[in-house]
Image 1 (cartoon, rainbow, N blue to C red):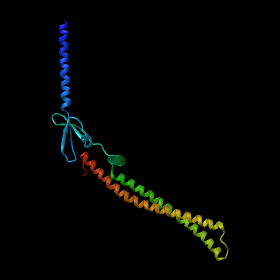
Image 2: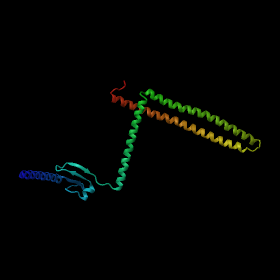
Image 3: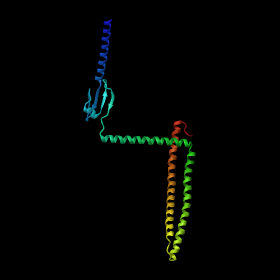
Image 4: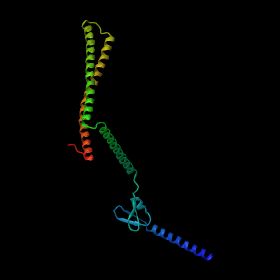
Length: 220
């Protein structure tokens, strides 16, 4: 019985030694390959300072690359790499946001007629604001003219213009100036909206054409 145990133990030790030998053989078959500043390839069983400085490949006994390790970046290169990564991430977010907006637009306006109608409504709203502001400006300008006429009459009569009247004229001029500035902004908004609508309509038509091609259902 004791002999059997000794034989089994010996066999186990033998297998264990064989496994360790295989592991050692596998470990020794791993090499590191790197290129120097002149582009020449170097191989080694251990990592050297040159390999770490230049970046290296981990290759197996058949010469196949199992893993690549880049060289360490300098502080300036790390800053530049981060900037590029941030810019790429920003572009990706912009593209994703644009895609969401395109999907929302197509869902809200299933056909061109509904899209154009919405654009006309937007322009009509701005036009109504222009009409209202222009009418208000006319009223404020008439009020300013009346105040100036009163001050003129006093001056022609060689009488001083009261402070309250001068203050009202100054305040009314401010009101008229604000109304004119608002009218200018609304008129510029109308023109900009027209240009924006033309661009959006062209984009909408492009999206619809792409969608029809994807669905395989081109319009007649």
